[in-house]
Length: 135
Image (tube, rainbow, N blue to C red; front, side, top):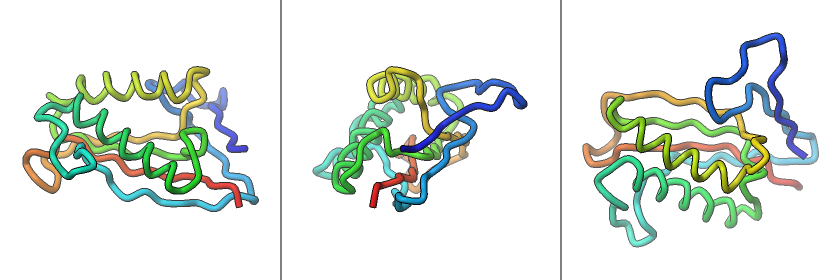
């Protein structure tokens, strides 16, 4: 089982993440490339960060299933948001997703950057992840 924790020797997390995540030896790390807010047919999920973030995490959930894993196996999430004006929509969708995935608050390690732009101007959110899949 993945162990996630926040040592008392550092400040508490300021968001929905754990400072540390330990992958046991009987697991393999699987890397999820950056996912953007597109639907399975390739269409953009919407022109706002909230709808794109929901699509991003729906895509990640489908990739977890393809790897015979689930949200409990997410070790790390790395998010990129195009501009501070899109943070509120991103955070709303993230909180809703994590509340469903982690009702007990046992969140993966997480980082967030605000970028000037992503691969295409219409893409507002991109998320990479690492999964620990039992062997």
